[in-house]
Length: 153
Image (cartoon, rainbow, N blue to C red; front, side, top):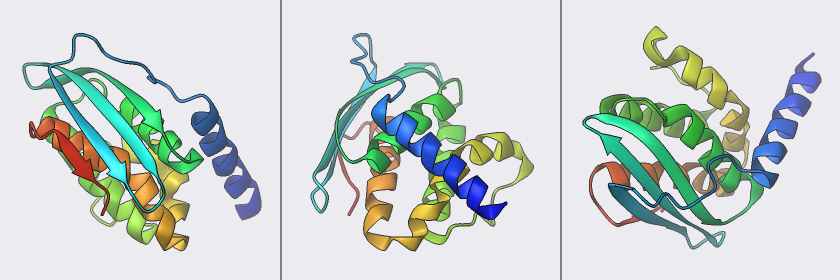
């Protein structure tokens, strides 16, 4: 059973890595940031459209490994429609998940969203890949905070 689940998760990561969702420039963005992971060569630019306190839309462009692209793709799908506070909470929880493989602070409030991100929990077994998985989330935080640059370091 565990091997079947791992295979399913790998297939999901590969699918999002090959065909990332929301991989586009968002021309009417209100916030944006660039992210860089110099260890792996991943680079991305993230655009957000905020409507008040809600992330109305997201788009990203860039290049990177399958994990980096899959994480950005899943992040854009998960964060769309959330408040900025919820987006920050998801970012914090995802980074904990990527670093440890678990999320002890994942309460019921964002449980569905965290379940959607679960396929990336396995990166904690490969410390050099954690930065790949968290780059999009660091870039999201920079964009939400009005910063223009982010790094996964």
